[in-house]
Image 1: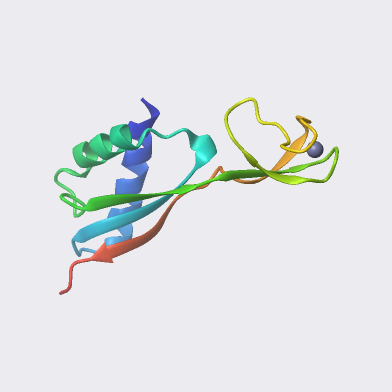
Image 2: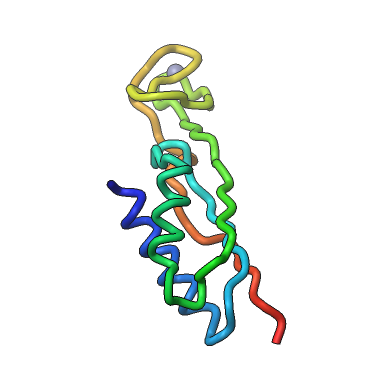
Length: 112
Ligand SMILES: [Zn+2]
């Protein structure tokens, strides 16, 4: 279950940045191509956060659509599911512009 390992790194990053304070909310940017199942990630997050400064924090996912630049026709298109192909010419030779994001965008910390 790859959501669990994602949850682990999110909790690690959040704990590190919290610097001893409690984390109340975590905003996570997730690219479409990461194929993260939000409910599984939420569950893993709760599990891993137990006993850390992140325990009880809300996890907010922001989905980033996938986009690619076609090396065949030069069109920029939004990408759906695999296999990824250009929306204009149907070509498969794409340079990914977005969709592989996976990072903690911001944290909300408890006021001290
Ligand atoms: Zn194309």
